[in-house]
Length: 251
Image (cartoon, rainbow, N blue to C red; front, side):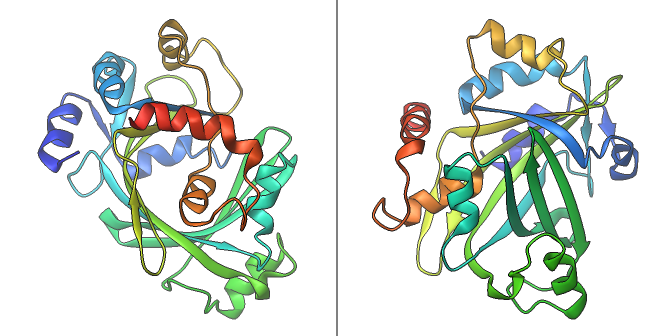
């Protein structure tokens, strides 16, 4: 999606600042993910204006993100996700391009909830400082063995509910990179409903239900890894149904 199109679809929303959104940071939350075609997204978004404000940073109502992911030599984080392990980790550096901030982040999925901790960083790789290594080792004792795997970039629109403790994000223009190749997920929009406690009265939940759009548990990290590694290198059989669903949307 081109910048002028972003401007056209986001301009009607009332803006909220980053400081104002901090009250709904939801670092410990329940996530519900959906994957939709860009055309469906463009049809749904205007209907949300009455219920949500939009995050504005640097005069823009959409944000550019970049992420660098880490895993062990045996790809334990990918494997744990594939096994649907109840307590699993994701480690990355996330760059918020609009305001030139980067954070080393640890996301833990445990008992259906997402817990995120983070630390400001200025680097992009595995040259972790003493403070960063200590931070990582609190969650993953073998942090010294972490390798950078893949990176991605995407554009995000973030909506904050006007009354409820709820955020809604839409990730578009998703691209993955390794050292030599780039893969683009054309037409794909990943939506994430973020709530302090599950609330099915959410307007977005009701909209998707009406359109028979079911939640789809997807990880951008896992999607990216499957684009660069074969089934012989990484076990992927439990993701087959998800891959088929994603391919139907992209086509």
